[in-house]
Length: 446
Image 1 (cartoon, helix red, strand yellow):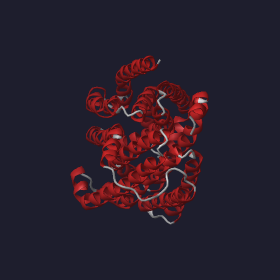
Image 2 (image 1 turned 90 degrees about the vertical axis):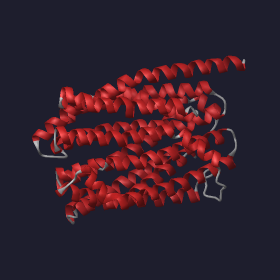
Image 3 (image 1 turned 180 degrees about the vertical axis):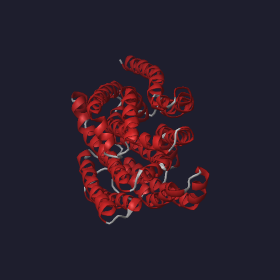
């Protein structure tokens, strides 16, 4: 990467790094949607509910994986920008080693605790059986997913975001074909859905490892000395992502509890269908965020804070524009979209209404998330963590328990819009403080 090229072509560079990342992330979300379609049509609503109830497990992996990976690429990017290639390579190897070990330990722990976990959740009958059948297999797939995500960040940091995009396209194709074969043709049920995800992730892992081995110039596999100071900074830098995903762990658990205790399995199924739309948009935001992290950390490491701010601003406008486009499209296709998953008209009606209300949150969520990732990129972990914890834990949990109790099902759908709108005030405050710090730094350098 070149500082002058980034300064003179900010929008081009944002799109160059972000679009492949966005496509990759959206394709990842489409894998889950395809799984949901085959589950709904060949397993049933109980299968969809079982997968939804286990999402806190997925967010636990994401919390740890993103904390390590985002923290690692932010440090490596700044070192790369400052010209310290050897140290950047060491950070890459330390990041991948820690990521692999920790995700494997999580799988072992959950495997041991799976049956007590099912009892604690109060699951029984078909839902309990589907839950264990699916997540026993996913305990192998989820660490691979985290490793692939981490490798993808460094591949993008190498300046090859298109490669990870092509890998994601291939993964989606493999997963869709295998879903059809295992669920529709061989009728393996929910285990077939899980096996499809596992085999597709393994294929992606092989391709990513081949790239790092043969094509990477900066982030190559090599011997390294474990650096405790780097690990501490890595965890601190990635703490906002950890908080963000762990809050999803707690919030999804809270959502599941409130929905099952107040409304029942059908509403949980509708909530799952609504969640897929939010998931797609969140992947777009994350794609933009992951795309600009190498750029922001590079220019910040090169002591050009104003360019970092400009990149953040332009990216915020892009995510708002994307939100508006998605909202317009969904106004016309909501019912057909919901009908892909389930034939029950009452569930389709609930999900359609939920989508239209939930999408109000999208523009605000985009601004909040990009701001959080921006602060991570420049090493401002506190600001990033506060934004993430506000939108993903403190405000959100209050809204989950209060709003449905007051407004019923409508209260369930307005949880996200209320949370993001309230969080935007915190985000604007910290962005203002960052702008003042940039102006002061610029004045001192003159």
